[in-house]
Image (cartoon, rainbow, N blue to C red; front, side):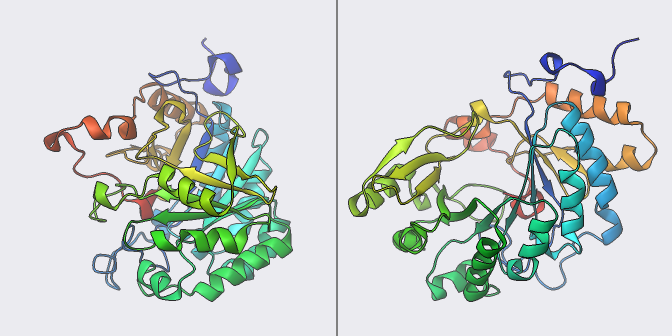
Length: 349
């Protein structure tokens, strides 16, 4: 009898069609959000009558933990919880405790918009969370309000970051999506605010995720342009990645007061080193942020599939993976562009 997925030795764990192993799992725990960022959840679409998932349609914590164990069996070592806004999920710290207890999980992280972070930072840390990423696109109150769809509170986000620092969460990273003509002139303010505090600011090129953000290349600020702007104020130099597949290019300040990161999916795609899988809050397994479809794991899980059967389904899906959308984006003709990519709020950034 052939070995089950859970019995496979490390050298036989699945690699996709481009030779990429499965190493990172991003789990969306909630499709709802308390922001309405135009590039993710524009309020004209996601209004008060929009039909989000019902609680019984989302995976339970027990189901998430079970599936995570199966992903770990075939190579996952790092887990990140996302949303929507994950802190809208009740008792999220309990799930973090469950995930950090799984043998083989080396790192559990969380991405949040920070509004609810101050009230949860201590319990998140107590349940095993070490590091956290806060999405913060600007420190300008007017632009912040515009970019959060009028539903965010900048002071609460900053309070959340302080609370995370006080709770001992580290490293804390700030993810800032930069859009030309909107917030690009405020990027330096973020560096000035957090440089020397241990908080790492990372700038993300505006991406064509989903179908609703009216993306255009003209609104992308290339990372190299931001590097030049920042270097004029604070000299910096490139440093090696922390690990293979790290999405952010790292630069350290020459004076030793920290570092800054650049995520350049548009101008310098990193598909070749992508080891990330994504699991939606309703249990659909996606192999790319830009995917058009995924594999339903919730149905077989709830219909009584064994761990071996679920593990084989996950493994087979990864073996067939050939995603490299960011690398081929510029070569695609209009008629070849994916028409219905998965929305970012649904699968996490």
